[in-house]
Length: 423
Image 1: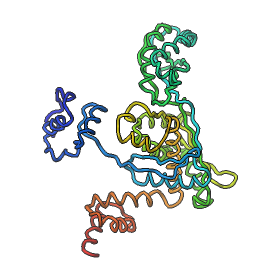
Image 2: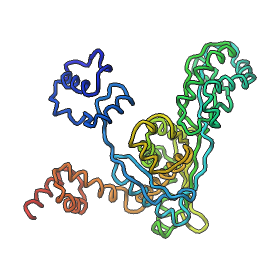
Image 3: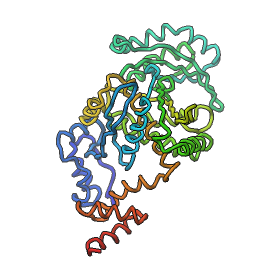
Image 4: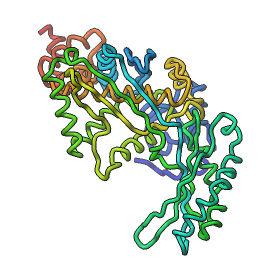
């Protein structure tokens, strides 16, 4: 039981001092919490710079997806995930996609949106037009905030003004559209929005409130497609099964939620490995899935004239190569170096390809043997370790668990005991 959560000056302490403090505050023994502590002082210092109140780090397995050919270029793709079968499935689908040219991707410019909310405007329609008339002035003011971004070819590009009805209130909302180049862009657009807000409020004759980016990055869409040979997938029946599985997701939000989760299994793993913001990407993707008023599939599957499977995916991906954890976390830096991408747009295109590959693999499994067989074969290793298997016991235990069909820890313990008895 915690003795108290009130710890004055906690943020001022070094990570190791924080650890000792929480041991005392929790009433637990140090060894019970020791896994929270980061043993590497260099990594502890990095964690302390990245977030507040850091005591340690948590290691997520990082693997490499192979076989990816995107716009004619080969990539080894780092993926950080705790879920078994994701990397293997994506790699397998990428291998099949290579047969007919791999993945083909295209992107919009890396434009992010900053929103400035104006309240208490007497004439919203008039305010909208006054703001649009001030377009050049507002863009110049925005670009004055970040001359480096402008020199790199980015900067504020345009404005949009919307009237948002919110029950009894109506807000005038200005969207500032900013090309953020190789950044995710949050800091750049937020800084511009803060600087513009007083002038926007003055022109609209109201008062500003929120001044912040939107994670609905629908001006930063990435599109990717692939053609999968029907024979390599398993035949015409498998193609038809995948198309029917997609149609189910397109028509039913209950299915779409899991269908899109499969896409994000691949995308979020690359986003995390490269030090990008998984929550921003996921929020933007799921919002995009509702763009027509209901939640549906982000991807599309159809059969071409030759009977092969055509898979396509379009979604917003606001990824960056500069700033944030991408530049501060050594693992993220190494992952980006291995990937070899030269721009944020290129990173987004590869990431989208991984999402489409993972989605295709999941639908193929669902349309054939079911998702559990391959997934549980890999999950069985975790169950075997949790049951207490030693290194030399894991393989035979996994084999028996999968054959048994009940991949549970209690069953693993029973089989392990039998193995040790020589049965």
